[in-house]
Amino acid sequence: MRNNDRVNTGLRHAALLAGALAVSIAFPAAADKPVFKSPIDNAPIDTPLKPGEPETPALKQFKETGKNSYRNDAVAVKQGKELYEQWCVACHNTDASGKIGPPLVGGKYTYDQTATDPGMFAIIYGGASGAMQAFSKREMTQDEMLKIIAYVRSLDQKK
Image 1 (cartoon, rainbow, N blue to C red):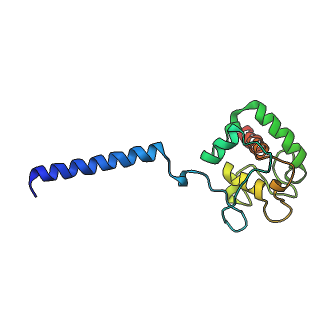
Image 2 (cartoon, rainbow, N blue to C red):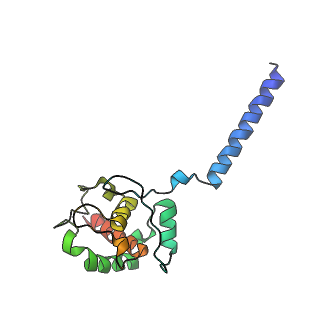
């Protein structure tokens, strides 16, 4: 192979690599989206909206990135506290330290996935073992689930 051929081949490879990189930045792989999994068998779960349930911008972003934009939103955290007191306090205690249900703060979890927002979302949405029911089957929206998670995470920050 002559030097010119090597240079041309190298330039073609560089151009292909640059093009592939540009495509991957513009269109992130589907693997970058969070995968919601059952804490029971680790199987992926679907999280469709209920009929008439709105997909808020925060929920849409969460399902695309796994980032809960309510975590630093004082109004959403306050709403999450109200929802937590309505739905969660009986089992998880007022400070989320656990009661009948396991602790949701402190880093010692019954289900390791509780440590991540997508993991906690999957548990709230789909339920777990014992008395933890699937809140997707109750009168709670997915957006409200994100607010509860934001509130629970704020409790960990206070310690």
